[in-house]
Image 1: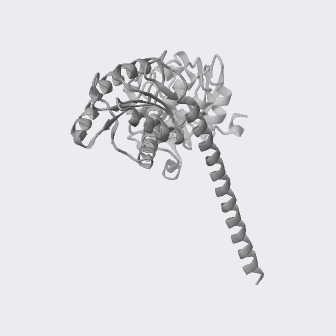
Image 2: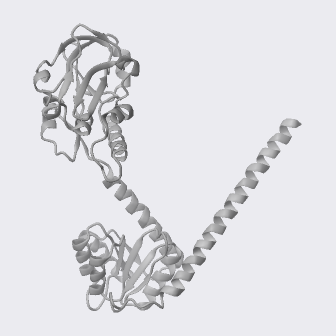
Image 3: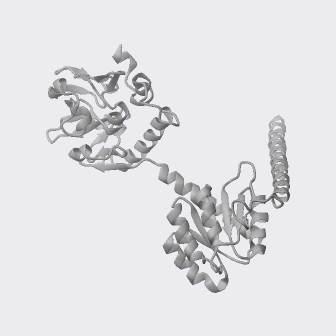
Amino acid sequence: MTAVLILLMFVAFVGIDFVVRTSLRRMREGRERQAREAVLNTAIRLDFTHEAKSLKRVAVPNPKARILAVDDESVVLDSFRRILVLEGFSVDTVEHGPEALGLVQRNDYDFVFTDLKMPDMDGVEVVKAVKHLRPDVDVVVITGYGSIETAVQTLQHGACEYVQKPFTADELGDFAKKLLIKREARLEAARRPNVRMVSPEMAEVVPATEFCVPGGAFLSPGHAWVRIEPEGQVRIGIDDFIRKALGTVKEIELPERGKTVKVGETLFTLKGATGTVHVAAPLSGRIEHDNAGLKTDPGELIRSPYDRGWVCLLTPSDLASELSALKIGKPVIDWYQEEITRLRAANGPQGAGPLDWTVFEQQFLGADEHAKA
């Protein structure tokens, strides 16, 4: 009986919490809608003719996006303002194509809606001109039922979508929301860093704005690469992520030949003008050989990280079980993009100089603290 009462109390609590949250959300949405209605009623009386003769503007606080609509039918523009402003968008409207282009040059818009058939400048010309002036702006064509074929053709000139008129408030509101989702997804994809898989020697010619990972090699969580040699030994070095994060290496402490290391312990140490970082061993085993040339020219680490800049040769002691912790192929690219995003965030929104080496090691390399002591 007690268990039933507890269950009923829990269900009641969840139900009350849901009702309260729903009520609060609806109250908040209602207040926002009232505020937008007030802005709409005030804005339609403002004069913006100094920017464009037919311009009417409604700017809401914290808009979802900024929209410019051009149509020679004022009733259509009235609908755009009334519907889209209440949905949370800031909206400018003009009746002529040349006016729209002038505004595009002076203002930042996310979307331009253009009628297809206008007397002074048709929608096709507006699409071409807007995409020429501002390739980042998404252009949407407004069309009637008899002009769908022409509207589809505008997609070849850079329009992202078309909407048919007449439309209801719900149809236009839903359409605008879907456009916004698509735009945000596209911008997010464009912000993702470009990562390429390359042969070892090609890392030397990859542009500084791109990142590369070595084809056929494994990468450790501590950003060391591992390439299995025909004899069963593994060659190890630093990856492009470390190379670009550190920038310059002035000295390297190579691992001692014949020494046995465990995965996660410090394998080698990099020194620069701004600090020191310890690179963890990606696998356990015995050091067979090192790249002695790096002592006299540590710059090879940066110039040729996957080829001439290799660090050491190791005979693994437990390759079968430890290899599963390393990444290879497409998972490396996905992980790299996440790591690069984290690195950019650590450097701050303005990319204020290289990240402190100690902080970089703590956040990205994961070397064993006890091994460094």
